[in-house]
Image (cartoon, one colour):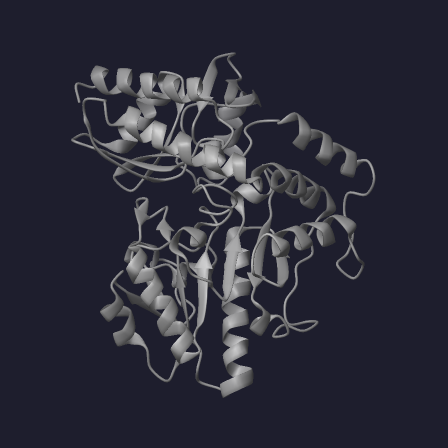
Length: 390
């Protein structure tokens, strides 16, 4: 049996796959088992921040795999210590807790917020306000934190302690009471449709949290590590969260999650309050250290912004595209008509790997994609839309 048949027979059907089996890749190009080459502007949903098999990243990962591939977190890890240092020195945060995914990072942040409030105010002050149309993960707790009704099915009972507000200050403020301990939001709602929050709204929520001693958590799982033209997206909004979470692009292709906390929260968690067998894996951290050595450069981040502007301007020239919303290289494309998923499938047939976000097409290309590759992606999308008579 071939790869697709084996998948259908032996893997749970939790994904709606495109009809492609990928075998290899380099840079922004992926190669299928049939030898067909694709231009990838999805980068594994923003994970392959430097594209496929970046030489420096491969060297860092393979060198570490040849030294020591895993250790218990009962021992100190040079790669994890270095990664934590870099993350803290490039931000205002003081401590890091590592995990294996964005959902785990968000679970950690939720626990930190609740324990901070418990330690300071006692029981009962444990509710967290999240935003409608948000997405925070697929564990039972992070599904509960997700502000979309369609995710609140099948898996009852969901974790208690979450309220959902509109992306409007009055809506958030109205939900704050003596049970509230924090607010969790994405500055750009990726899975919700690449919705960029209003800067004044975000700043007002940050001020409210400061006044009420609520823990402000910013979910940077998709927006972080250079995706929006800043190392972390909250920097675009001129706020200082108490906690941020990141994952996806940090590992450059290997699973990692991280929860970063400010000084007031750095001693909240103690031994045995949280942990993970695979967190801070040395090989993964080696890859992340290399990613940050590239992405953390200001000139590199400036180029991400320039490429985002260039891509938006090129996309808006295409007949059939109604609007484009982006921050850096986090891009949502609204079509004038037609089904985004059907167009994405046709793009794949034409050699472009692209994904969707609700009713939009979504691009999350490697951050080091070239201008010529961006032009090629636009040409394939244009061709596809015209073939579909859109």
